[in-house]
Length: 202
Image (cartoon, rainbow, N blue to C red):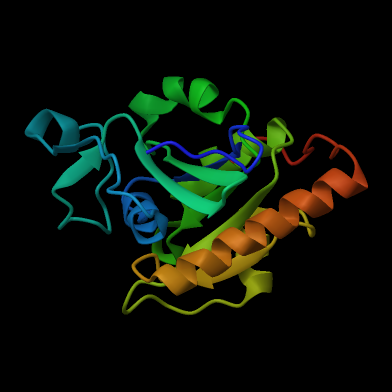
């Protein structure tokens, strides 16, 4: 379905990325936010795949995203948000440059039980000065950490927001998206960020 403003012009498009490690809930978050049937590129995990994909902590997971997830949110007749869920496994990192081109900002989804899995995403976007927030997906039974502990563990700069969410719930996921937009606006108003000096975490 096409959209146009009252003057016949096409709506402005905003690109938001959802990144993070394998099995943290990126596909679920896109599904919770999108107004359309999400495009998913999930395939069954195979025996050869388990040799390269670290499934510790997500042993029950049976599928994996092999390209991207895609969704859409229509804010108004003049503004549409496109959501792109990025594949988390190292063998698909070659796609990140293309997917991240032109992005307004990034939601880096994290599981506190496996924080190391989001390090590559944080490093990638820090080095490219792309605004991002870290969203802690609250899995049942996971230990609770305060923001200071998480910030220290991830070596996050003080300006990077940390939020908690349930990626299954639309309202909770929407709050994360709003926080990201606020962060992108704040970064734009304050000028370009200095490249991170923290170095690689892996």
